[in-house]
Length: 304
View 1 (cartoon, rainbow, N blue to C red):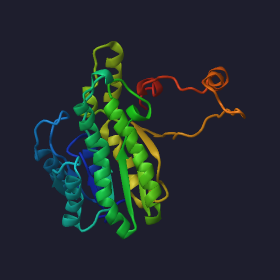
View 2 (view 1 turned 60 degrees about the horizontal axis):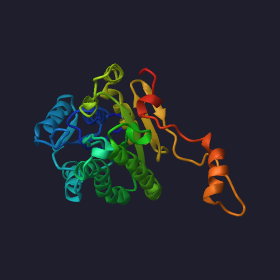
View 3 (view 1 turned 135 degrees about the vertical axis):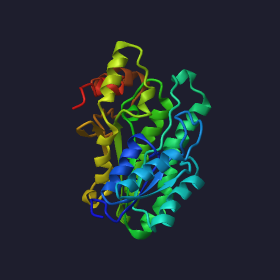
View 4 (view 1 turned 90 degrees about the horizontal axis):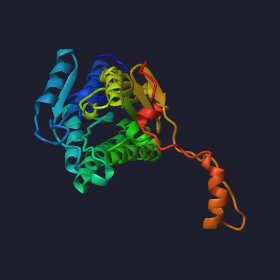
């Protein structure tokens, strides 16, 4: 089979539906052999069903691709190890890891429980680490590999009621940069995508007020299929020089996000006191302070 990732083996976590499904289908269409991983539970963690993963595998095979299903959880080192081992067992290697698996436990911070915090961190941040770490040994040995991690503007910018999700998603950005730095010598790349798409994850967004309804209608215009081409590109050799970056995909837009860098500094030769900070440093820096904004207030234009 020909294509941009022909001959490569990819793992896509949480690919029983939504963005993950679209990524798995696109990778297969471009020649990759795909492990479709999904544990088949609700966003609240209820249930457990093999059918979502198997359904995507059947769809790939129907279109002439090659795939196998896996239903292990990313949230433990053992489960993550079995996901990567599935690629080795079925296809003999691993070339691309797409860390897409996710869950939600939205709650205002002052009402959030420790369990709600831990459940989201376990899947998003710990899960990304576990799966990436399981693949890293093989990437290092073969001197090649590509990680594609899903982040979110909830972490990059902010949102209401998502302290757990936001912290995990921004943590993934730092993890991706660390992987990119540590593994560059082994020709391993690591990048993030902040997807804008209507999916099972975004379907939980409140739509009670006129503003919320307008936002949901805007999100519904953004199909998960639009994210998949960037996943394929970042997994391909065409992106061999692209690493440590954060991209956004929003309908037909591709966004490159900034990363924290110093904006301005102030110096006091004798050193600072609390009073001199209040009198001199803070006023000098205040013009550069960031507003307390949410993602939809910063990215406020209609999808293109």
